[in-house]
Length: 242
Figure 1 (cartoon, rainbow, N blue to C red):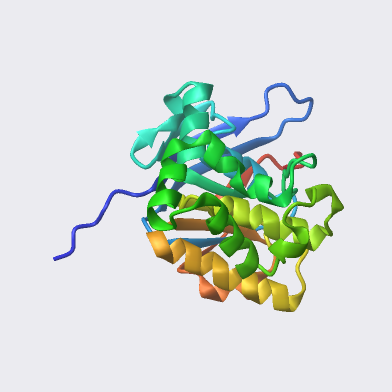
Figure 2 (figure 1 turned 180 degrees about the vertical axis):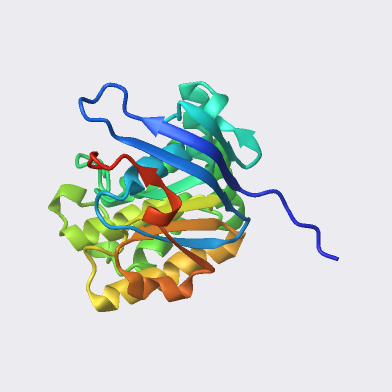
């Protein structure tokens, strides 16, 4: 009989509100778990609370009530710096707005997470031997010509190219948890298919757990589980959720 492992992500009895905002936005969630290696698709339109939920999972937001456990650690009880460390070591995040540093080259943006996490840098050196070679591999797999664009600043790239660079940055270092917020919104159909293939390949390499938020329900069929954000989270009716 197989032994069931502890969940990689667990949220319990969560209540959150933006106390400094003039509106009355609040989000409530009873329970959410994600198992090791599980791939979860969260379907949600604008205003469904997706950015707030992802912020809580990643530790950039802290609930007023409830517990958030990441890899067995209750991050909702940790200091801001301790949450930052967990996020740097264990999360690969593809932000909807990319969050690339415009004054750095493409390669430097992809390698940036390794500057903040010794464990991810060590994982790359152990499995790939060389950090730059691993960055090249990821960019090439995503259709970014490293020879042509590798040393250009990200501000010189198209939106679709920036999105692919952001994905490579999230994958590097073999993080245990991958969070993708509308990661295919700027990609054409061909690039989207290549991206989704790489997303699943990188997650499966290390048994990483994956949460992807998107309004494109056509992508949901590839995932282990599909949840609608409006069914999972309760938000105050007069609020406009981030």
